[in-house]
Length: 287
Length: 168
Image (tube, rainbow over all chains, first blue to last red; front, side, top):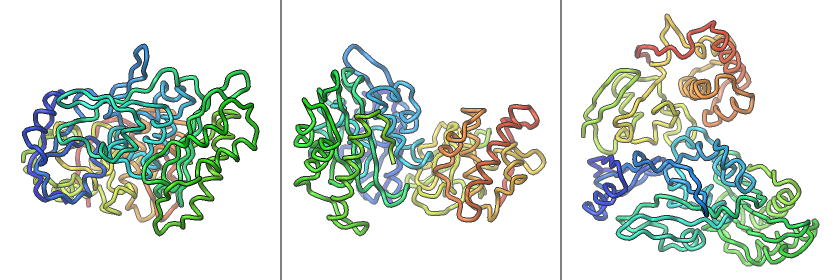
């Protein structure tokens, strides 16, 4: 419980929100959907800065990027027609893989990234699509997903910084994708997330971006697996080789649900199937 | 801190503590329709609508609702004038112990407000955050289908805003 929480602030602009955060130093927290904060225990927090009213629930395109505002609820992303076709609908499927409509209505894109639990839905998909995180603060920072998601120093943003937007390169729009989640039950946290994007050029794999989540502390790219595919006319044995390479040497997160060995075996199977489905029709469903 | 919001169509204000959750605020003020189930955002029995979107009030700070419009099951219909969904849930035998039903009705209402003629997959998706431990989901699924048809055919009041009668 946030027992010392005394006030809420409802800034209308990013500048206003940053000013409030600066004023409170480390005693304020940003809130958007709030689904994780309600259960947080932090005696330092005295104020909440609600960033859900600052016009950050946008979805637009410019010449180089698909731009997605950080306070978009996962449900809006899951239902977006634009995201439903961009890169084979990868981002929409990732958002829809959060199993409860009630939570999808509240959880935001930014929350999924910043909290970045091992089972968070969006980071694997954003890493797959080479997204960039836009951070507002004293200076605006643009941080690649690979750095932001993979590095603990960005896990908690600076105390007076806000993740405002995610930009996905438009050149990813024509890639095929696959996204699969393996969990004990539909509502249980994911044990494995396989998120992949493949580019086809006249029957040959011209590009591959392969990401594992759930099984690792943070979503990770698997360059060794990508090398098994690029430049080849893909057949089932290539998917099997890539899947084996993807799980090779990874640091597995283990809890009471399943052993390391079980997770590795499942991850390899899920990855192989996801790659095969992605290449064949790009319609491998989440969960 | 002072919280102002529209609750079931009426402007209201409350003096709240910072960490107070919306579910506690509602139940402390006599709105018992939202139920405390898992207290973790898993079961959906605490669902209410905030600006037309159903959310879990057990993990939603009351402060987040400031300036917003909150609808509880007490605002959906009355005993005299039930919402079409309330009629069809009864007619289809979708209610057994009833604990999950307020949340389920609000999720279903959000669906019908957005999509008056939902496909089967839409209904399943709309109710996927509401767990029922008695009946299963077949009858509730059927009830939403029948309600949608009834509202489209104009046989029921459907979206008519209702007054906030309180019930335990």
